[in-house]
Image 1: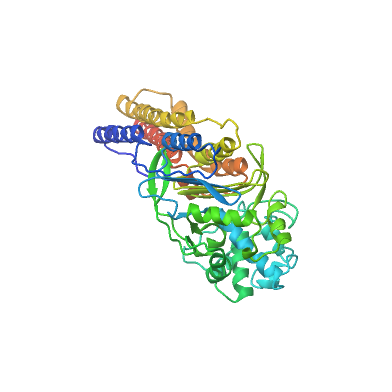
Image 2: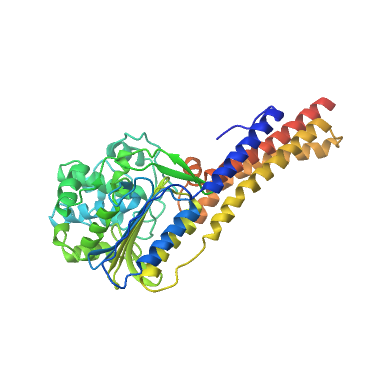
Length: 473
């Protein structure tokens, strides 16, 4: 985050130049070069309508890249790729869709007799000491009692499973294991460590040899390989960001794949293909537990029954959907993320695709993109008047009773402190998830920069009042 300029005339000029640049970028958002391909294997598939919907959405919210593929009863009926050099073979991070691969590995080991779902985690990972009550099934179903309200790893990217487990041993349980659903990424990191301990192979080796190779997933990788840069979003503008590859979080969120490979995988999951290495009963157990199965969720999308799972990293978003009664499997990937996108645009995009292919009216809240863009000039005006107030106060030295000036100082210092203390807690309550300031910045850089500069304006006004108070004395 940039510091405010201390010399007002020069700072004002640079600020105006920055505003002009940002406004120009805003107007150009969504106008970057794009290529797309589409094909249809079903005569009545709404190809043209779906492609127009995807194009309009991508332009409106300024997506650098977007891939969508749809299959019907195992055959691809629609494939779409938008972005410079992007094809249906382009590699994206798939985020938490990675969890389904880890769950599949665990279920293979369960059915081979190597793991018992209802045995304590410590049976297979004796170095794990958070609780003897947590079972393998609890980890898979996200009911371990551990939450990211109590623990968010702050380890170096090269940290191992052993490093993570040692760090986690300092945490405490929020819920009794098996009683309360709480989505916690490290549940699946522990499962990845378990795959290694039980199989005697590295997690990557096991998944490659027992899942990717048998399924023919030649464009799915386990070492952080991606073809497109991730992006944050600032007032809908795309800001490139390098996505680090935390080895310990691979089982829960850092597998990369192409849209074509992901649909191939969905096709095999939907038909319970024997190549998956898990029985039909085992696959049904993975996909139909409420509210969270084993790497899959069960519910409805646009009113249609679906097994699904999404993936979200600071610069990437993916989704995978199996419409169980309609025969369609859907995958989408993009390389841009922001909290408001995750709350509005991306859920709408998935519902829109499902709605169109099931002959329903898709949701349309793309007007919100212009609302978000309008926040930029609003933020600039807000900060301009805030800092102008402090400057005029300093230059004018307006007489003010001592008590009133002290009150102004207190208010201008209390407000920033209150914001800094309350924001993470408010976000945690709203989202039901733990939040760090770093993650908050990645997910809301525009709002955080605005808020930070606003806080600095409060501090600046307090400093002016302090200066004037001292000068009078």
